[in-house]
Amino acid sequence: MMNGKIRVLGAWMGVVVGLASVSQGGYLTVYGGPTYDPNTGTGSSGGSAMMVNASGTAVGCVTMYVDGDSMGERSVRWDAHGTLTILDGLGAYADGWTSVYAYAINDTGTVVGSARKFVDAQSMGPRAVRWDPNGIVTELGDLGTAVGGYTSASANAINAFGTAVGDARKYVGGDYRGIRAVRWDATGTSATELGGLGGFYDGAGDINASGTAVGGCGKYVNGIDQGFRAARWEAGGTAGTELGDLGTDPSGVAYANANAINGTGTAVGDCWKYADGISVGTRAVRWEAGGTAGTELDNLGTDPSGVTTALAWAINDPGTAVGYARKYVSGVFQGTRAVRWEADGTPATELAKLGTDPNGFTEAGANAINAFGTAVGQASKYISGSLLGDRAVLWELDGDAVDLSELIDPNSGWTLTDASYISDTGWIVGEGMFDPDGAGGYDAYERLYLLQIPDPATISLLALGGLAVLWRRRK
Image (tube, rainbow, N blue to C red; front, side, top):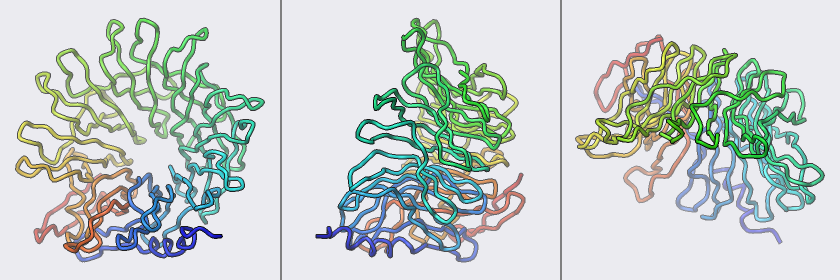
């Protein structure tokens, strides 16, 4: 007997194919991801926007619902032309539940991620997958399975030529041997194990056009756990190179991870800092191409004991990095701030915020930066000291903050709450709240969005709430 949830999957697909387009004069157009029907409890809500390529094709993950019941996570690809595709996985349970995640897309439209694999409706674990530009899914190779066929693997990043990197569980004769960093070449599916530092967990999180990958590895020395270290794998090779840290505890333990790498091979990430063997928090770090020494990037102050946190999430090809840092003024914590670090130095430039509470507290962070230096992320918005909620933000070259919600039609139903990624062509992907009936009885729900800002060399006149605002975009 067919489960009732499966019978209505076709209805759910009919819900998600609609794209919201706002194109009234003076406003930026919003291209929405899958929709949710609050009347039937069918569609998708929540999820994460992951990435958008140069042509404006975006990928993300959403939670699927049928008659109010969660059917797991699905990957979605959509664009400004009205095309929306739910990317196939590798099977599902008998009731239709599964989990599929798209993490990255390149300019050819190839997507990578992970999908739970099912055999006879039994889960065999998540597997690394690749979707071609037509949406056809291909399972990528693993590093062995347990006796019953279970394993786990994920493709986390892909470069312009289709080489992907990620991580996979390793099994030998059915025995579990930890997690390893993995590379998959564009022309095949076999998994190439990348060397680690003797630890239990390794993973690659980013790869540049030349094929050099970065991430992190667990480190053991003579069988003793030494923490987790940032690592780099050169193109075509398999040996892992340990990247420098900012000190260790008295036992030699340190923690660091390389989050991103640019086209020239410079990487950024984060690392625990130790002073006289005592941790003083996490610091943003840069590792130059071809070298291993970690350069500490400046922060926005510390607490009275010298502890703070700063992380670098992204770096563009010219070498400018962005992320966030906790801010302290005379030792008093004032929240987190979006930060930019220039290529030729270490000072932290605090990017503009969208107001603060009466005590100067707010939260902000930059998630991505394009080749022209335009960054995007999220900031809490305050008006006269009152919190309105989170907003998706674009930061111009001078550090000014632009609330993206103010660039779209106020009657569109959208409030843009986060910006995950920006392409060199100005496409931005993120998450927002979408109210399907305005002042009606249905609540707003979380939805993915896509929009394009004007060309960096263009001066645009944007109508914001009836006001003509000159928005400067420059390289």
